[in-house]
Length: 602
Image (cartoon, rainbow, N blue to C red; front, side):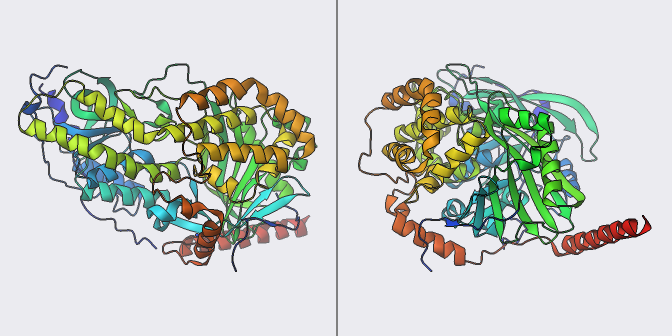
């Protein structure tokens, strides 16, 4: 089928250079220690008619010093004067969405020799949200260089009298550096980018799928030419559009809960009760709200905690977070809570450097597995139902998904190059291979257990949440660490659940936990668990399906690994850019001086 004439201005190959960024977190016993309490906080006649169009690259868009420069280079690279390709280009894999998951999968598929295309309407935009990661999740897959700040100590604060320090290194991902690295890897391996929206998808029984794309046409001077439309084809289409779930289907209503956040990076006079070498994963203290009845009532319905990253002596990233609720809470309420919390902690902001709001769907029904469209990232429900984390999960499984798909894709490409028609059912088989690798049976059991926990968390009030997490972080033998990182087998989750119940949670919480979990035990845990087939492995609590080396995660070896991470000086990490650091310190001094002058004048 011929493309509509405007596709010559939509499909372009970019990013064929390397990144200009220089990619610079005693034996540990169970990874927590007590902390002294402190004040805080379409029809194709033959597949063989298609051919691969190897357009030359004109741009390394992410060799950038600013967002504006990146946008200018993207506009310059869009050649709207070229004649459109008279044939519909055939990709091996076409990925809709260029978030972390989409780019990770594209990079790994391209390294396996697949011809990959990516469609996304905001290729020239940085990712909007901050990402955090445990370093033992990022380092094994080579992404530690994309972390710009590492804390060896992580605080968990239950209330004003009870807290812990977790000795598990945690890092903040430099989202610009990560996108730069992934786009450079993609371009180095021939991935083609299309700056457009995927609006429609048609699957055929015996021919590649067709994706309709729409995008705003611009010339090299950035002058718009109106929205244009075209089509692209691929043996396999991957929906990596995130929470919009553009093309992946669900058997039942999705019905997720939401993790709602309001966060900001502040320039501050000082860090208040916080220390530069310790971040706070969650602080559920709430006494700062007690003089405001409406805030107390709101917090009872939508409990929130503080997530704090000290980034330098005069810089803090603070985020007020509702872990999960159904329906979602209000980010405006969270902003008000954060402001009140900061005032109670004596933290004075001199400038808001950036802020963000998010509503992350968590839990919800699994997608239909398998189906012709392959999901990846949040679209495939890879978001941890009990924590909201996903980036590290995509890091882990993208290589194995690419490795499983590549032999099947390359065989289909050879058939196309030889002018042979597709075998009946070949494309369904291809997508089934992908889904089977994204969601092996035992990992679906893991999600079943997490989904059960998610439903319980939606119902807990602030004190019940404090009791729950008191028990959770008391878990021995690295169980809580591996639960958060998808490293427990199905049977391992059963072991963990029993130990939380029998050994860890405060006794007063047992009746509440039992009563509130009863409605979900059958439909969210027992029945889905049993539907996944034989319970394997039965003799492994710790299970790393990617490396096949569960011994890496056995407590003795794992804690030694954490020790090596704590002692490493990771290249690329920093506290804060030196120039910005000086500027913020000056702002802090000036603000303090002004305040003193105001007091004197009074």
